[in-house]
Amino acid sequence: MERINAFNRFGEWTKDRPVFLIGDFNARPGGDVHRIFVGNGELDNPLLLKDSAPPGQEIDWILYKGNVKALHYEKVDYNVNGVYPSDHKPIVVDFQLIENIPE
Image 1: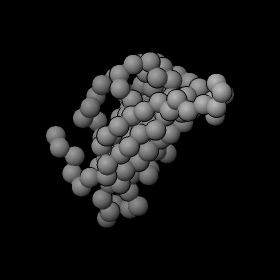
Image 2 (image 1 turned 135 degrees about the horizontal axis):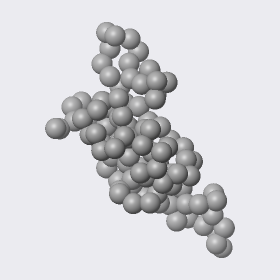
Image 3 (image 1 turned 180 degrees about the vertical axis):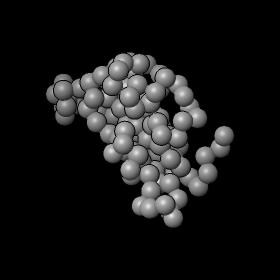
């Protein structure tokens, strides 16, 4: 989290910027790994990330923070004759960069 939070700004004189963490975590929401990044529902903690996935049992996430809003989350079901491009379905999230996130 220290390394992630270091990306918030270029320097003290700049505004916070969006930060994204993308990975093949293979860990369920609510587990130790997920809680390190998103906490236990502390929505007002600016140091934590938000999960773009709807509540559920997704094992891979696109986490984010800053002036960003997750608009659409999708598991990609693309395959050729039952062969997928990954060991599981990839995810795609559409984000909107915004000046101020509504409270």
